[in-house]
Image 1 (cartoon, one colour):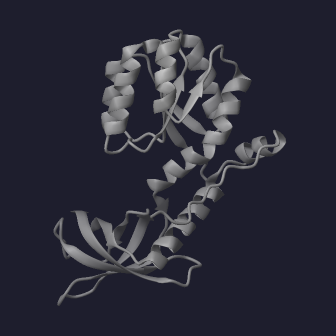
Image 2 (cartoon, one colour):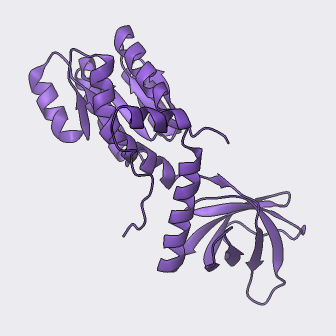
Image 3 (cartoon, one colour):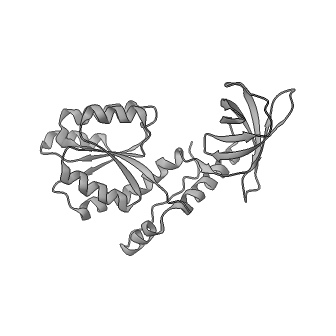
Length: 255
């Protein structure tokens, strides 16, 4: 089983801070992307999806600019945000109100772990929102008054799926279709109103535009189970050994 990997942006110009956080994040199978200055970190926020963002307040006013870009980013606005306290007490107090978590200085591996533990479930949950689970299941694409297209899925997420079609008939991006499938070990059949996002040489991506509450519930649960299966055993064991409950991997329903 492939280890679950989530991604975090770590912005700090202090080498010791970078080393401590990199080690603590990798212990939880979180891959840090390190940036030492504001311009580069803002570019990364625009270009990539992160499940968590760590900002060193020693960057001064630039720390607030980075957080603003995160909050305005279409792909990162829901990322779990962390501040790393700086020497300016007033700036730290302001930042405390704007981020989910704050690491106090002086830093230690234990203090970093203690703050990360209660936040870990939130980071996993954020990753689940964009998680694409590899799975091969039969899929039928239905179009009004046209021949059914039989496909096999490549992956599926809460938002849609990628499939390989058994026919060379092209579909146009933006075309409205219905997608019919069933998840492994699930009884609920799916008939999802969808939109074609892309088509290339027999492969296509569709985005779900309408799912029943029951189907959405089942899909979220199924994806959560798959994410849970990918949680590295050494991470689960670490939480058990330290006496902390394993962060809940499931989010059964979102309004």
